[in-house]
Length: 418
Ligand code: SF4
Ligand code: SF4
Image 1: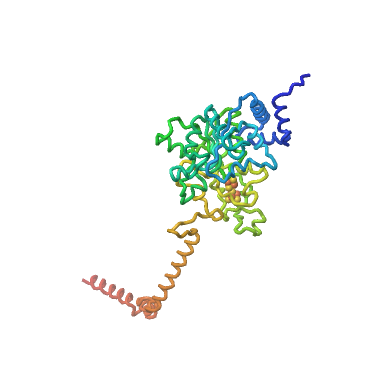
Image 2: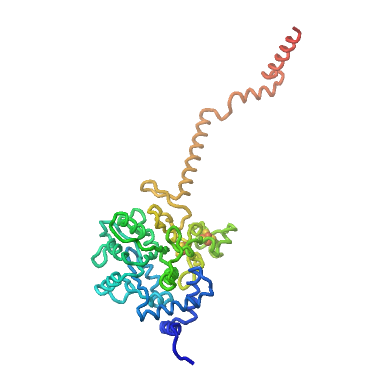
């Protein structure tokens, strides 16, 4: 009997040293399969392909990853870096050839910048970008290692085999691009198209994959990286270059509170009985009906829960649209806990409900004033013909109409005599 260890065995013992059991890793492979829309029957293959690739790293076979962080809160990196309780996704990313990450790399400063340069020079890497590009002040709104963020991205994208934008800030500029956007924040796809059109780069823009959410869901990123790096294929993308299998389904359609929505059972106030009963959060601003993502299926925090399940309305963070600057997701969806968008009148900001109450109040006030005017003018007693009609009813034989019909009869009689 052979005692030689397979790649899978060696990989499993590597995970075990990091406190991750084989069973837990297979669960993770199941989530990757669901996220990629693959059959559960392929779970062992995913396990195998990840194992072989990670073990292959020692032979220098693995595609390197460069992870740039631009204008962001580091939330997307933080989404992975659960250092106190390492998650499977973190371990996989760690085990993959993550050659440069300002936050996750052990190295720092000059040596790390050098590692990035060598990776870019060699080409054939995946460029992951977290955070918005900042074009303000001629690109000086964001500088890293004495370089403008604009120049860093132009250079880093030059030899990448794919650009993967993680988190809504890199997809449409995110919070930084919300009005009034003084720093000139912009999403990466839009930025690369812009510099290409302006002739500032002379290479073809690599295929772009946009993975929105705030922060990005680690399961989504790992699934895309597994697809790109390990299974060797580019995920199917929709018109916004978002992976279709993840971002082409409405949250509302998979929400466990959907039954309450259909029954008209809503939560109108936090802390209410309705909230305790788990009713639908639509009146509290839930953007689930207009947001596309598989959050209710893949969930968050090692698949424990997700926004609506934990009692918070969906704020629509996955709606970031890289194709336009007009619909920045933060500007469109705020105020988050209100059902309607704010209306801006100069420096004043109103909710539509407030405006309708004000308009209703003004109309009611005008009607009251109109009534007072009628009363003062004595016009509330009715028009004079009302009095005449009353008199006519009391004196039917002498009424004008009766007289007229008598005269008509007499006239026709006279005409007949002739
Ligand atoms: S809580 Fe939100 S996503 Fe869920 S059913 Fe209600 S409106 Fe839809
Ligand atoms: S449920 Fe809504 S707010 Fe929560 S992560 Fe998904 S898209 Fe974002």
